[in-house]
Image (cartoon, rainbow, N blue to C red; front, side, top):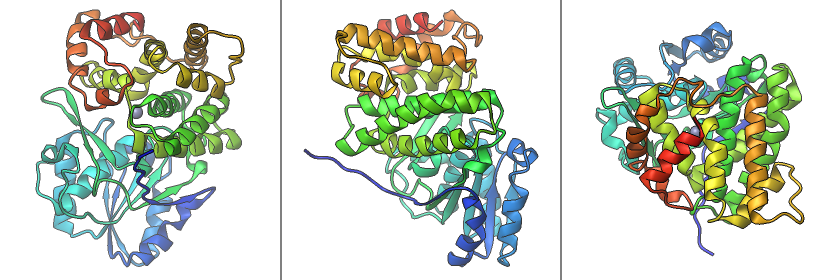
Length: 381
Ligand SMILES: [Zn+2]
């Protein structure tokens, strides 16, 4: 047995943990803090209290509230110029994956030269970064605990992944109360993203005994709690379990990496503009069934973690039951097929070409051909 498991950042989990931001800023002796968020999080009333806590420590706040979903290199480089000019000495990211990914990329450029795409790939960031406190407001991307950021190249219509050394946040304040009242559509899309991370990390060729435990726990918690959080956004218990699931999924895929669902979801997002969660949801049941004959035991474990009775069932039947359960969940929480998401079949060829160039493909347990990817897209249509 031989594996590597990286653990970072320092995590505080629980109700009101976001209120510890002031304490952390004082501990870090930060004098000027760069707060990064998007207009939606600000409108939801999640930003002002956190900024106030930071100001109460005597630190100055420089706010950047223009993060968009799937942040582009332009936004990152623009914000980094502001941060450099202001000489900020710590960063706080408030929001979902976009705000946290954006803050990670900005942080890289505060101590490393632009352009950001220079650092694409693994361990390309050379100089250490400043302390970054991530405060997630969704249970989906696990960006608060992973050493990866995804930035959009709008010109080339591609998503660029930067991962490894100096990319992850130094601290995560994971406060389930911040997710209360999150709209059902966002709850669904982000929750399915977390489920995809859990399943793909479990079947990844890079999985280890440590990541596998986290993957299975995440699958179990998400299948049980996502429908509840979707039905009642104020269900505190379900929200807490989803936040916990997301943490488990982050530990798992942050170390084991992902697979074919994300390999197809990235070009779907970049070329067709559909959200990351929607793209994952549409592909997940079909990729699970596609991979099943390469990892029959693991598919059985996934089915069991989803609460499926697998006793007496063949490998094929088990895989079919697991895929059906995922489709059922998808319908229950209002997620759509590629057709309903407005994806045109005329793009399938290009999508498959782009998917074959994605880095995560090397971790999928089975290598697909271009024809097989097109056929998966057709099934998900
Ligand atoms: Zn994802």
